[in-house]
Length: 121
Image: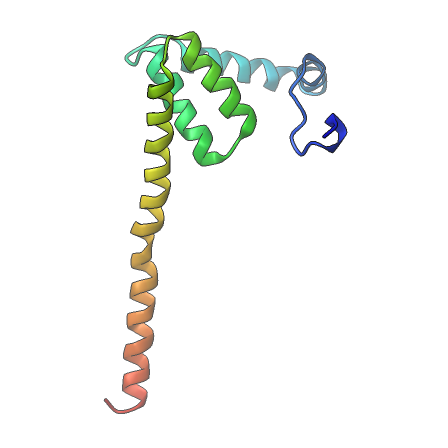
């Protein structure tokens, strides 16, 4: 598949330059924000990168998945740690769907209650 046919073209310096050219201040502010967020702090940089890998999988951003997987590896995360972070993300995503089933159950219950009242039950 050629680059033109890809849904997600590879990020490039040209793209970064164009973003900065079109909106310099926000681009610079975002870059500074990102550096600040991923700097060593109360959480080690490696942990922050593993969190980012997990979140990137939930948000389904292929650029973020690649960048933060690479970032985690640069901070000595193992393949096992990265995959475990991805599994945590998968469980959280599935858990959210399961937890939100309460909304459907409540709606079903109200609908059934209304139907029973209409039938005189």
